[in-house]
Image (cartoon, rainbow, N blue to C red; front, side, top):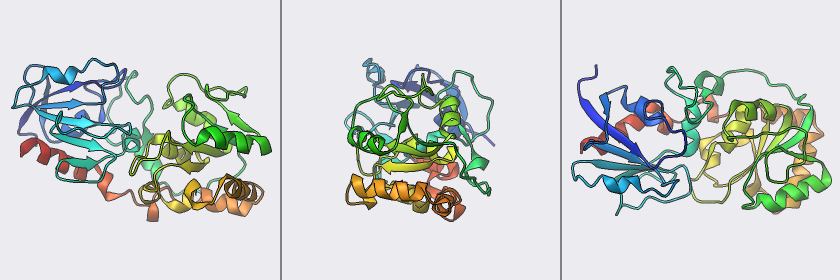
Length: 299
């Protein structure tokens, strides 16, 4: 029973962020009676100031708790906020909530067609026992727009040996194209055509794991992942190929090609559950996130 009213507001989030159709709203709505207002809210959720407006500065009321969420590799600044949800390890002011968690449909609510993210993965699909086939017709996909990080070299090195279909703006070379936002369902539908997907983060920061690996796993395309080793704890390490397990690109590429040419090896990856023991990690379960959030709000 919701027996406590809570006034909340959101500032400095990304484009198309919907105040009544987002992870934090739906999470709090399971416990509180919510009112969205910019007039002295009890809680202000704010993000990395995507458009340089610094709206969070308009909320200086000492009774307003500021809670920062970052889906980027930006660390919280506790001179500017009270608490945070981020990629960083848990501490008295932070709860680790990596970006990929927000790409799951936890609450099964009616969706705003323009909501953000534009596609949320059905929860039951993540632990569904289903034998996956290995007959995806194409070798490897890569979808990115920014020329950043280790992917700049790796994509070229692999493509020199066997064609990588670059579906985004970076290295675009395919009749398949993924335009628009990178979290749309059409992106995942195209990824399903490929045996592998190059899922490289922009940079390696401890604990920083985005939707890239989750999307690849959901699409049934074996992720080739470069990023924080925390991904091997968030997900089942036997379900993807981790760049850091190899001495260099050459050794990694040899392993990819060996897997590609062996249906049994392919099947081993594809039929592994997304999470260890096919169990969603406790720390991302909504009830546990809500406990931490309520403590931030009420203390």
